[in-house]
Image (tube, rainbow, N blue to C red):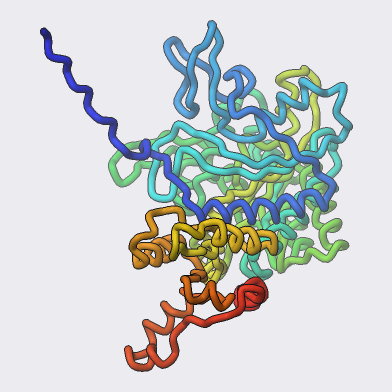
Length: 482
């Protein structure tokens, strides 16, 4: 009889570029998303939840080649169609706005939260699955809609715990840059290649600096490895105009807008962009959003190849500056047109949930937060109904609680379990306590603190354990949790 080959055991490991999230991490994210949703709803936005899978055709940015979709999405072929995991929340919104355009109000205001997937090379802090939290207005061309997004983003950051002064929202406009390129002589259809290189060059300003961007605007740039990237071929005068645009920021919005107005000269498109920036700035100022929160800054280059009008980006500052940008968005008036053939104005903002959480954690925002449940221990297996009644009483009072369901034989293992769960208290009731109608409450957080600070003799004189009547248990736990 042939011997059956034993199948190897699967490896218990997370796929490359992905990660697992446990208890407190999930809880903190959920609480933060709830606070963000509260602000979004306060501004009149309604929730929308779409499928995690879209057709590649609907996603639009990535299309299949001969064998598989282009790099960037997780996709597969099914019955002759290519399907893919969504890589952002905006493309699904465009599909929804087109599909249900006769049923939805116009403008349509929605917010959505959930994971997105990108088939990109992972790196430190860069994963292939991450959360996005978006809000968009579809159907309004008014700069007031852009101003509202900036105001709402400011309120949201402060609501989740980013103090005023620890962030700045910078606002730019794609039309102004297009006007600069018109003035520089590369505004026509025949200069599409040059404009593309210019956009990609200024998008690398943070990484390459002004010298690197200027090189790419001209003949090109050779990097440290020796690789040469061909530039846009602009002459000195043309490059100067683009660089003046990037350095146009002044002390006040009015001064910055004056520089931009002079720079775009007679470009109608550029003038529209300056006018929109001025209107956005004025609306925000009237609502009390001054330069301590929101500023006009032409050096914002986020997604300039994607957005059609206003562009905004929220960056953390001061001690949190290392976390960089935590949110951004802008106006994208061409996206829904792919489905309907008609231009539909839209503007929206997206918050990077994971990076924002990391910034809050670095401030010690969650360091004292109690995440674990109160654990009722088991001293006598024959009295499980009494212990479960204690748990039910705590839960009815809104206290997170659980009954120890492991093997109760070794009480030390029960306390070790409490430590692993991050339990603030362990409830103990043996035969003697039950006869007297009392319980022992072990304050595990205080016990750990005293053990670290006091000598053994001092700790014995101040044990982090007290006795209370069973009827007072809820009140005693509530008092100490508070």
